[in-house]
Length: 257
Image (cartoon, rainbow, N blue to C red; front, side, top):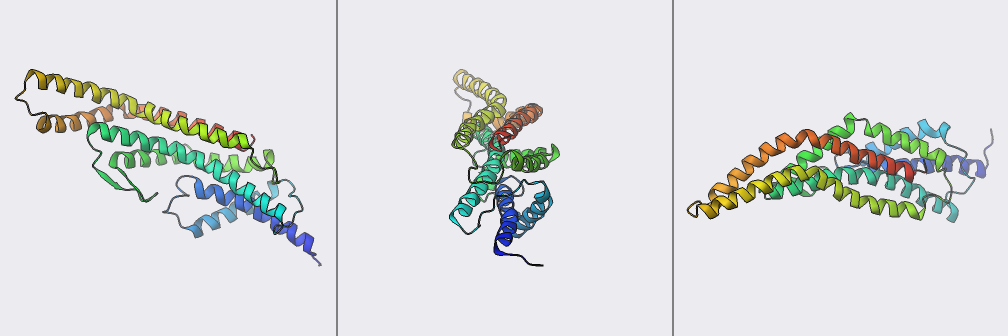
């Protein structure tokens, strides 16, 4: 059995370029792309997915992976994978921003902890929202949907030098505004309720100047804030589902579906 250099380069390219797109996506998506998952696990998982989807991928162009054209194709595959995974990161970031807003309103902004997934300090309420969003993402099968979108993208956006378009980057930038809008929608019920309660405390202070607002208002605001948060918690799930659906639809557009 004889294998020439062209056939060897074609085989390496047919495996390497799908592996680069898949590994870039795994590096950016939630849960798998966090610091808690080691690089070795991500590489092995990306290699397994690449071997599984290899028969489903259209014919790869016969380009030397070490040439300039091969480098261009490699960059395009990395950009496609990062774009599809980064969108889901913005979906979970909406819950983190909502938790920070509610924490500042309740007076819990000082209570912060290190996020083990990202390695930054976030309020405790943001960490709670992030854990809840991650569990919702897994329970809804978000990890399976994004892998299915990635596999389908090889059909609609085959491996070539063209790759992702410039308009796709503008779509991702515009989706960042949807991230902040989603965070406001998630935090709005709690913000309005705590604001009304704060105004009531201000009226009480004006009516009774002997009442120390700092010794009474702070624990009351925190206690009422937790009660309001418990009451509005069921409304967070459908709002998160809506943001996740918008992220999945944008991932479909990025993948050319």
